Length: 407
Image (cartoon, rainbow, N blue to C red; front, side):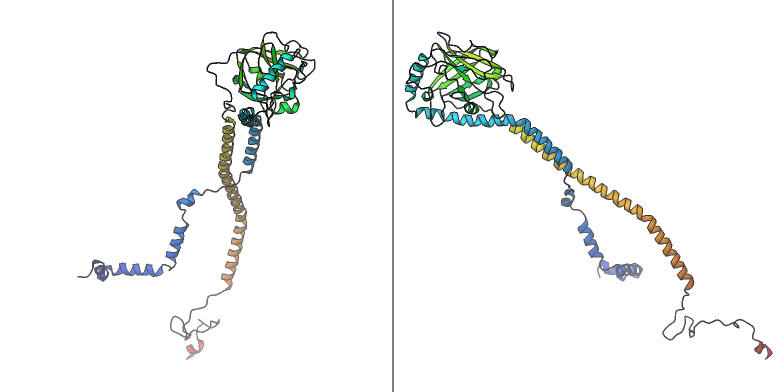
């Protein structure tokens, strides 16, 4: 028995269906499969659908750049101070090694520093209209030269000053010149060296309000009872704040030596940028805390750089805003193009209509002036089988034949 589909073709009842199918297949163009394949290829795949149009949003980009510049200017002082303190911490880390290799030895230099303090005649005073206090104490021992005492190489550091309450951990150098105060704190020459002892009064100065370094900017935040620690040539001295005052330029009594007391005063200018007054933070020597953290411990500042997190967040946010605005700009541009195209098509419609009317008029005239020719075969016969002749007008065609009537 033949297969079922062959039976369906052989069955006379299905011949009409088969003929229609064959006719439709014959009428179908050969390039249909190719066209279908092209249409299938033209369909957007998932990957193509994900590729949304993007256009550079210049206005948004410029706005984001301006905002980032503003954030940069606001964070610059914080970042510069952090970098400066980071460099200072590295310098402090090498201080103990310089002390160990000092010549003369640390013990000898401390002994000479105490002799220097004992030989001082007075102390220091604040002169009117002067930015820094003036030390006028002199040593009676000519062999004790200030610049050669408590000096390390190659950094030239004298000591290390730590104020935990305001995150200060800075090196102390000799003198109060501008170059010295730009790289750290300065010990005021003419006052006691910061090695401790009764009837001594050491004065350390520092800048306030520098854009690239903190220094003594927060000295006004130090409160009574806070501690100040000095590490100098292997020894640690602890002082407790007794007073924090703002004085007039003509104040002269605050920096003098007080008999029997071991004092330390920190000096800086105020207000910021005006510098008409001075902040004096005076502390008195107390025993070191127990347990003593020891000398030469690593610096705890600078703290974690949160400014980097803030700046990175602003930068990432700016990139996201520009990226998303690019898609919006592409959509807006596409709408403008479509609107321009639609407007152009509307402007072309009257011209197309006029061309259509003109073409219709021309076709009508051609149809009226042109007569159709009868179809003939190869032998010149028309559809009725007669010989086709050119058509001509016969005035007697259809008129009665008088000659035939006579006959």
